[in-house]
Image (cartoon, rainbow, N blue to C red; front, side):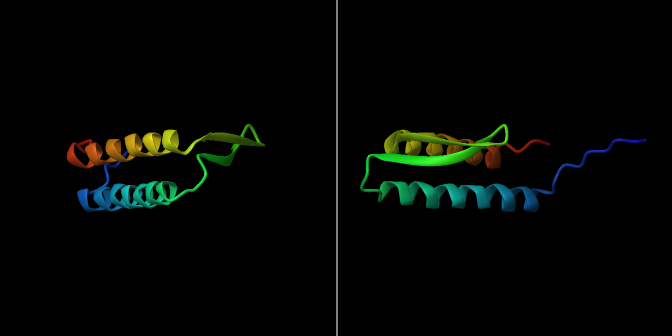
Amino acid sequence: MELRTETPTQNVWHSVVGGEIASLNRQILALEEQQSPWITFTCEIGGQQVSHSMRVQEMIEHLTKVRDSYRLALDYPLT
């Protein structure tokens, strides 16, 4: 059995990462319009639904860092 990995073409890479950046931008804008200082979200961990609250500003800072790392990925793609 032969294992092969393929690096996506640059157009596909830019499309996927660009879509993630656009999504993060929309999420950040929505959070900036929040009236409440807290946001609660639910995620699944080990098959269980877990709710977590965090300050909106902290979430914006986190999403901004993620978005910026995607931007770096566009500038320096893995080849």
